[in-house]
Length: 139
Image 1: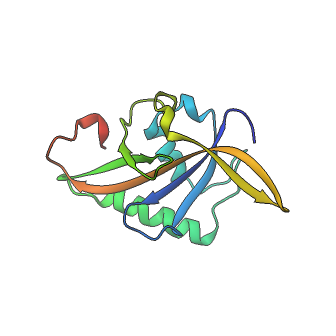
Image 2: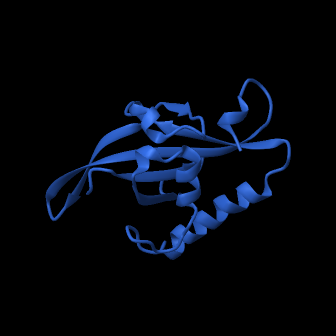
């Protein structure tokens, strides 16, 4: 995998860990979290990724429905998951590279061979607006 490529995984908080979207994202460190989130919701084939499978399209459609159907009293929150499985809210307007703890060293096994790569695990949720969540942490 390329030096500037991150494998991004997006899950919905509280939903089965098998219901994930996963894509390679080029130049990910220079993109904002909002740009990465929106890219994850595009099921089409591109120069890096194949078109989403039917299951991935179903997950993508469900997340898009949540985003599009949220009320004016609800917000989308996005968190990254660190190496200790802790979650941290992100400022959607900040670049991924500004959160170095969010970028994880990972391994995949192909044909019995371990292949190291960099990854970013994201979790989204719909939550009621209120409390102390700053506006740049939601959309």
